[in-house]
Each structure stands twice: as C-alpha cells, then as structure tokens.
Image 1 (cartoon, helix red, strand yellow):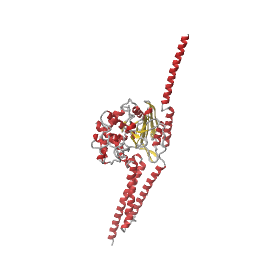
Image 2 (cartoon, helix red, strand yellow):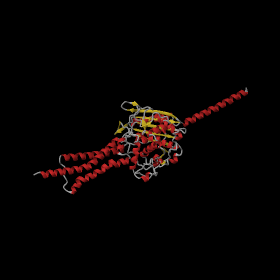
Image 3 (tube, one colour):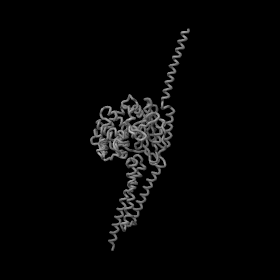
Image 4 (tube, one colour):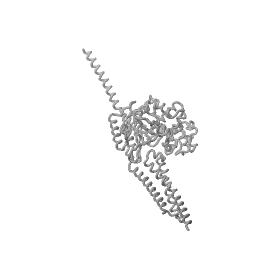
Length: 501
C-alpha cells in the first residue's frame, strides 16, 4: 500500500511539473506576442478615427507575426460614389514601397551570379551616363539601389506623368539621364531619386532578357504567393478608386501610368498579398528573404535612418525597424517589419496628400507608431500650408488683374507710347523685369525646392500645382507680350497720325 502511495505521489508530482512547464511556456508565448488583441483594437480605433478626421475615403491594413497573418481588415470605402467598402482583397497602388521588390530582385540576381552590387552600371548598360560621363561611369548597382548615385530628387521625378506602356518605355526614360547633372559626388551621400530605380528596372530587363513585369512576377509574386499582385495592375474589378485632394475635398482621379512608373512605384496589391510578402521577407526559409544582420554595416546613412536594399532602417527599442512609404496620384501606403519580433505591418489608402488637406502621413505613420511603440507624428498640414497657398493665389490674382487692366487700356486706346528712353525703361522694360522673377519662382525655383517638376506637382498636389503653373506662365507671357503690344500700338498710332492731312 505504501508503494502504491509513493507511486501515486510521484505521478502527481510529475504531472504537476509537466503542467507547470506547459503553463510557463504558454505564459512565455503570451509575453512574446507583440500584436495582442488590445494593440490590434487600438490600431483599428486610430485608423477609423483619423480616416474620418482627415477625410480619407478608405484604407486596408494587414499585420503579420510569427509567420502568420494575425489581422487583415478594410476601413471606409473603395469608391465613395458607390459606397463600395474596402476589404482585405481590395487592390491599391503602393507607390515607392514597390522599390523593395526591385531591390529584392537585384539581390536575387546577385545570388544567382548574374550581377554584383559592385558592378559599374555601364558594365550592363554601356550607353548609361549622366551629363558628365566621367562621373557617371563610376556609379555602381549598389549606388542605384541605395540612392548614392548623385542623381537629384528633382530629376528623378521628371517622368511621373509618362503613360507609355511600350516594351522600350524604360529604355527611353533611362536614356534621358545623359541630360542630368549629378547633384553630389558618386557614392558620397544619400539623395532619394527615382532615377535610380528607373535605371535598375531597365538594368534588370537587359541582364535577364525579359520585361521587368515578367521578372518580378516570377521571382517575387509567385514565390511569395501573391496572386492578386502585379505591376501596373490598374484595370481589375476590385481596384480602389484613387482620390486626390482639391483644396479640402477628395476628388476621384483617372490616370493610367506608364511602364516608367513600374520600378519606382508601379506595384498594385492588396492587404492579403502584402501579408504574404511581409512573411516571406522575414522568413529565413524564404527565397526572397530580405533581412540580414549585415544591413547595419552596408546600409547608407540618411540622417535619422539608414537606407538598405529598398528599405529605410531605423533603430528602436524593439531592435531595427524596417519600413518604406509610397505615394501615387490618388494612393498612399506604408509597409515594414520588425525582424527581431518577426512582425510586419502594411497600410494602404486610396488618397494622396493634398496641399492643404489629406494629411495621409498622420494616418499611416500614426498607425505604424502605435504598432511598434514609436512616437506618433503631429498633424503636418496646418497654417503654413494655407499661407503658402494664399501667397501663390495672391500672386496669380495680382498678375491676372495686371494683365486684364493692361489689355483693357490697350483696347480702349489709353496706352501711350513712351516719349523717351527713360520713359520706355520705366513703362515697358521695368515691369517685364519684375514679372520674370515671378515666372522663374513659379516655373523653376519652387518646383526644384519641392523636388518635383511642375507636371509632377500637378499630379500629386493638383491645386497648388495648377495655381503655380498658371501664375508662372501668365507672368512669363505678360513679360514678353506687354512690351510687344505697346510697340505694335505705338507703330500703328504713329502711322495713322502721319497719314492724317
């Protein structure tokens, strides 16, 4: 009997130890779970609140952890007019998040021995050059991938409105780099420029022998099981309607981007597929895994972050945080992951930031900050943007009134020809000299400061883009038409007076 009691007590103690181990393991797993129910609920609440606050039509979110999608959800509307709800299957353009796909293909091609990051670009594209061939001959594949080539942000945005879908569209765009002046020494420092990824897209086509879309489809989309994802997949039934802000109102926008957009911002996808992509990026078993510890030494410093292969890398209390944002006309996105947590995040919106409304970063960066314990952004659009718009509008109105008054006086024959050289300078040339700086400010200086040519400004922030265009062209035209009209008027009046008896 004593032996049986000992056996029972031993069995009880053994079961207790096993149960304690299971409990400890379960508690450890609970502690390791980053995206808890409470955190997910808080992210949902923030998105819903800010979606309404800044008048964004719709959004889609996906969260992944430990190799699984833990949350995928749509918010708001894919189409405001038809009240079509956003779902995890709704397609969005993700803008410059597309760069991570291109960089990943380059890394795979290096692993396959097809190229090296240290190869000069001219080794694969012999005709590639900037305005100074001597300088651009030293640009490497790595320089393009990490934005250290010296190409400027302004030059990189020259082809945002290109609509060509011909097979040679990328080749034609890249051939124009011969007109670009490098903004800094090659390899010296970081400057974000879409020209780098346009060139990488063309380089992929030349080295592989297939179109970029086919290469990325085979190497990324199929491998990561992303059936709804494609480059320039903008004609599908479940596409979210893009909206741009005209002043404070989101307006639907129709634009069919060309193949030049593909490598720098042409991926269209949905929340479910982005979840699969993020899982693949942090999985050591995946052939498209992008994260490795050598990023810390290979990434180039860009201020408060480093730029690795198509991703920005930030230091945090959670270890490295890797992310990239993106914007097309009518779309915005942010995606990233925390390698040490095996957790990923992606959010997509069917609206792009306006000049005085649509603060999309307040939503996307705010959700990211809440997801990974970072400090959230303050509202970025405020009084300064309204003042900027007011100044441009005032200059346009003043120039328009000046033009209207002048031509009205000309029509009513109240414009007198100058009687002396001094009068000609004061009445004709001085006003034109004053108008030319206004034209230069609107057509060149401000676009360079923004890093966006006028056509790109009109695409991304149409209200201020069109106002600046109108102001610049009106001032430029008036500067030349005004003295010409006065001279024609003077010659005509002189001829008439001489013909009188």
